[in-house]
Image 1: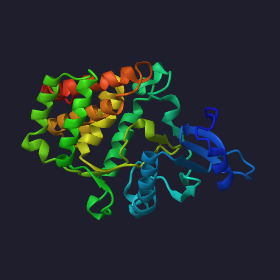
Image 2: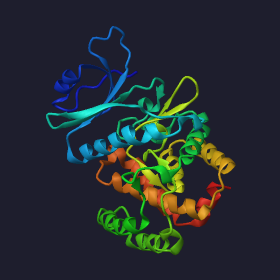
Image 3: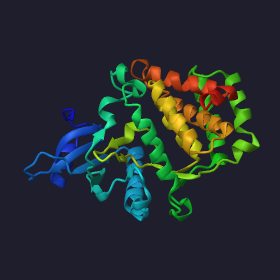
Length: 319
């Protein structure tokens, strides 16, 4: 493991003392691998997630409900590759929302990859083993086996009718920032306003941030998927999201799509919509990031958005 980073929240030391936890590793700025304070062995057993900013607090509260009320109801025996995180506890400490889950032993790919760090050699999944491409598709198959009709009403469901107006507003921001031309947005609007696009609805349960950075490779070959702030999305959106965020590893992307074609019927037109929506959303998410840290990644998402306007480009990906 990499050495632990300094505390990112001023109340983190007090929170750790309150929970009687000792930090061993900083997985992300608000995600720590910990052990009980009095534990003899220096091995992580608990993952602590925390935050006090309103958006982060809301996200944690939603993830708590997913881990506590949804994941335990799924039939894990049906999964070939997927390992799910296990909820332990949650609470509020001096305006800091926190949640603990059981630590999953394995190789987290996040240590070699951070889009927002000074690691250009790792951008876009560079260096990640191509073998994980087939594993990712196995996990995709496991997630698609979940009966979405049995999930609680609070689980987020993708709604294209609601997303369309949001796209229009976000597109104006991207035009104002100089990232997109109005003519490009108009072309995309025509495609996204088609009857085929409007018929999209969620078809599979997902963690929401489905790509190898959120995978933990276990010794037995299974994969734990973390960061469960997801819901029910069109499976094409989920599939193309993982593909595009591996932009720095073309061999992985090729192997991944080959495995998808092997295991799923593929409608290129639907995959095209998936790439168009996801690449735009990711570029918008990174809209205010500085050029040094996220410029290359944002530019690649914008390039995918432009390419997705050409159906032949997407067709060639699956050829």
